[in-house]
Amino acid sequence: MQLNPHFLFNTHHAIVGLILEQENDRAIDMVTSLSDLLRAVIANGDAQLIPLREELEFVTKYLHIQQIRFQDRLRIELAIAPDTRDCLFPQFLLQPLVENAMVHGIEQLAGDALVRIEARREGEQLLVEVRDNGRGATKPSATRRPGPAPAEGIGLSNTRARLEKLYDGRAHLEFSQPATGGTVVVVRVPYEGKPAPAQTFATPEPAIV
Amino acid sequence: MSYRALVIDDERISRRIIHTFLREEPAIEVVGEAANGTEAVLQILQLRPDLVFLDVQMPELDGFEVLHEIWPYHQPFVVFTTAFDQYALRAFEVSATDYLLKPFDRLRFQQAVERVKQHLAARSSAESSLTLQALLTEVGPPTPTFLQRILLKVQRRLFFVKTADILYFEADRNYISVHTATKNHLIYQSLTQLEPQLAPLDFTRINRSCIVGLNHIAELETYFNGEYLVKMNNGETLKWTRNYRDNLASFHGLPR
Image (tube, rainbow over all chains, first blue to last red; front, top):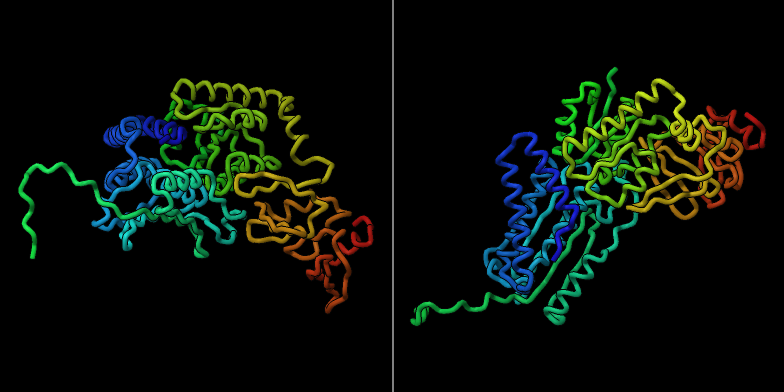
């Protein structure tokens, strides 16, 4: 797992800005959020599967920093079904997808960028979707520059390779750019609960009849 | 003597940093700011600042494209501000006065401002600074030669299209749609700005929103009211309106 170095430098620059403005609380917020991110990257390097809840915490911290930077321009929506929170998900898989989504919106649109993360159970699968409102494959208008649809890029192929290695064909990544605009990336992994935690009490829970 | 500066960055906090640092520079007055490339081009052309602080990665047009768009009309001193160090070489190639890597502190910022002030002073004392002259002859009018190619950007890629390959230019609000046999591209310019830069024996204006490449015309067909239908080699048909009838001379290879 690597954080984009430019993300770090730009975040530092934003912290300098907050200090100059004497916005102490927000500067502190930014530094602590950044520390949390770095701590997670440094400490948990070898954990492969973690509860989705923890992965979302990491991504939320990342987005929180981006929101301070692009305060007026970045909108974030989360739709996380409660029964997915403890489901196992590959660590740090989501962050690069979210970063791509953010870059699509922020770099291509002069207006507001939207990043939406949705998680839900579909049968025996956990589905996590990252959606943005960037240019996607839509046609250029007077205010949008022309260009071919962006290719999936190397980032996604790494993610795919990682899913393949972890799940051996039982996980999928879909990339699409609907005609209505934006880019949607959907990750499906087997719906697997957290390994049972060590039992503190020997007595089993009473069965509900 | 006070100099006028424009601050261009898509992050508000970054723009504020420059504002704050400039408070201690009475010689420099911030006359405006822009949060994306298109806005930047408009502001530079309207406000004609002496100096711009320019971010590289921005929505719509990046910093280099902004310079490309404005350079023929106005040449401010440029200080790049970016977290990316890989653009430095290119920045100095396009005549940046300085290149500030984010994050930067007050001292480094002051050095950049000092450097710009020296250049500005040199320019006002001797208008014909060598570099500026060189730049003017390199890219901008008044140059007697006509455009041989047009710089286009698709995604992150910049490339040229030879003017000889262009079938016609069509105005599209603030943009021009550049039609070639294979593709159409948008450039941020007006036909009126573009027209004098094109070789008059190769291009001519046939209506208010269209400049046509004469070498790509298959035939002209007379139409009503002294108008003509222009049939292009690729099968498209354009209209040559009455108000531009005088330009027909160029079709006959005559000077207008």
